[in-house]
Image (cartoon, rainbow, N blue to C red; front, side):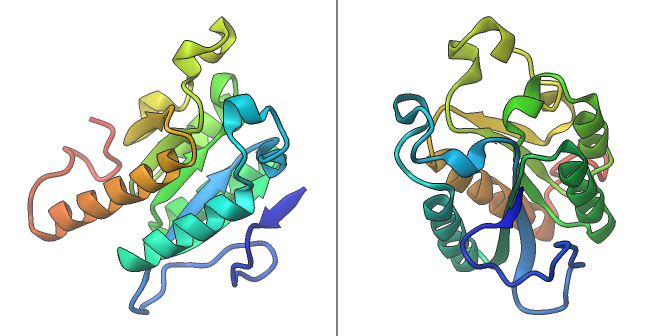
Length: 182
């Protein structure tokens, strides 16, 4: 299932290039089972729903100059397609790959093609959980990873992207290469 969570304004298919409007596009992409937040293991993932997180992300994003588009899918292929579209549009991404974190080389390779910041986020701290969750195939190609702060992880990622955008606008070097893979 695919969803534009919390009433975004994207067309079906979800591809929108960066626009010349006053707000900069920022995509918050979510992998499998995250549509179940609020009812799925609340002791691990909290009681907020993905719609609650979408509202917080959109509010903070607007304050920081972003038009936040939050999407969720259980489909690896769809998530890869969204990452390709973000790379083509030079759109920064906050990504919660969920279970794909640990084994999806297709998702990792799509993330490696990024042309703007990509922050990997997790609600829980995978390093403090079962051993199979300790490996992220995404972390090595992401700008950074934020984990273990619940829904606040998303907001911290948005703030990090905003801060890096400000640094880049001011001329401070944020990375040695355009993809940030140094």
